Length: 112
Image (cartoon, rainbow, N blue to C red; front, side, top):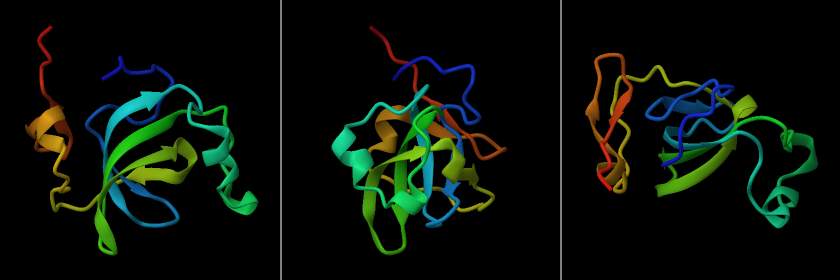
């Protein structure tokens, strides 16, 4: 898990929702700008392709239409998740140890 980028709107453990597609997720890593493959970027339809010069978030994502998955989403496409239901993803137990009253997930302390 990388250190939090100071320009990022969302922090590690923040529950978020995709602005367009509606799936929910929990932030577990942040890239200060796009850091995926060009092939992945070009696969996004031009009319919804985000700018590269913004934070991109790695999410433990859940959707009613699919199994839990890892999502990579631009900041412009995320909003805070206001749902009270916990987000469920099998890998979250490796990164988080519970949920705060405000909905944020508490990162596990990693010992080296």
